[in-house]
Length: 420
Image (cartoon, rainbow, N blue to C red):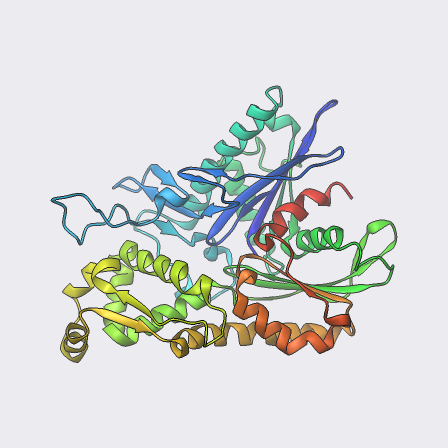
């Protein structure tokens, strides 16, 4: 799943938790008092109301020195004004920079603009979100002293190295969220642990016997983390097996979509777009996610072939396509059809890897009483369907659950960590 920052405010009269989720594609935060906590998930963002998370994206000035916008407003958007070229876009967003902390090949990490390194991008984003967090806290509790009373708990993927955590600590310090690099006001926990605690409290009726084993499958945009926990006395959790982690999150479906597009326009054209027109390319990916990826159920009867108009979503593409590809696209009026089988092929390799991870985890853990699917990618109806088809008979009473708002499970579980 995506990283979560939990903030606990320590005072004689006011005690608060505050989780913050800094993820590959989306980020968010939540907070609660530590005494009789009511977990509040923030849903007010720049240009957005009612969303539990905002985009992990930055828009810089032309020299890439100062952040002009962050979150949803930073995403690439075509200019609609009269007299403007259709090929112009509002910005070239900086996105997915958190993947540079992952243990994946360098050629799979996103290319950042010249002058921007991933540490600067992470720090700048944390600073922007940190300002919103401070504003939110001081509006609700005006007398809170952030540096003295706030304990930040950052949840990270199970596979995060000590070096990655050290880099995150440095970035959080540079972002002004702690006043000493070695501050004890910053702690780390894993996303699977936070999600497991959230599920344990949410499904107490199922997990009410000491010794019960359950599996949490945390499907984020970048990583998928798995951990099998055992319920101990006094609502404590033990770790039944070694945690597993794979880089097979939802962003890999986006990569499958781009590979499909590359087959239509030519791989060299796709590479040029990635290098020179990242904003337009990402806008096309955004449209795919909103109109195809998030809605795909894996049911052929429900699927309607989607027509992608390249002139609308990526107009610059017409300047680069040549040869047979150009002739074909001109004959098709620069429209590409995404048929059911095409979209299924984008999902299947990713889901197959997740299923393999789950199977290996179950082989190591033995029988479990419940499986919980959490994280942003777990909202996929097709992913849920495939996992239930594969594992329902391997989980007691077919107890495979997707909690309400699964993308916020780590946020809310992070709040509960210090309450236990």
